[in-house]
Image (cartoon, rainbow, N blue to C red):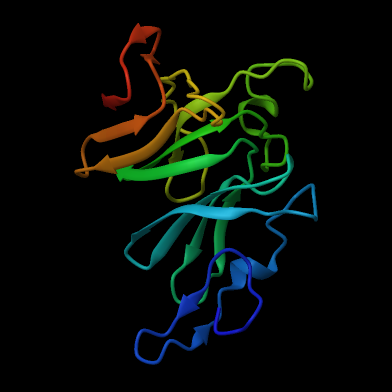
Length: 189
């Protein structure tokens, strides 16, 4: 950006487009693989805080969610679960995420016991919908799930878009089932 090499997200002064500090880029957001092509997929703001999520290539790149101060990108919390994340929404002071999250071993405390739904890397149960506390990133007790479908050669990821009116969330994506019931592409919670 402005001919400066930077990682995934920048903060620009709205008056002259000069780069501003974004400290989150300097704290090692790639917990496993240092040869990453991670990219930010969604950013939400509430008050003076930004909530950021990403997806990455190859496997092991940063795909989690973090909270940072808008003023300079100082991280408030970081949930570095693996499994590409696509969308964020906020309702009732909870952050909702659409992803195919499966490995939280690198998140402090190992959310969901490290590997979501499995022992070791042989068994993956993807959590396509999760909820996190806005204050500390801890996972809330909200466990609906979708499936993921693929069309042609595209990768299936499940939920890809989210919106909220502050009380409810709407989820859209490449799924055909929600909580084991037929529900294609759009669901409201």
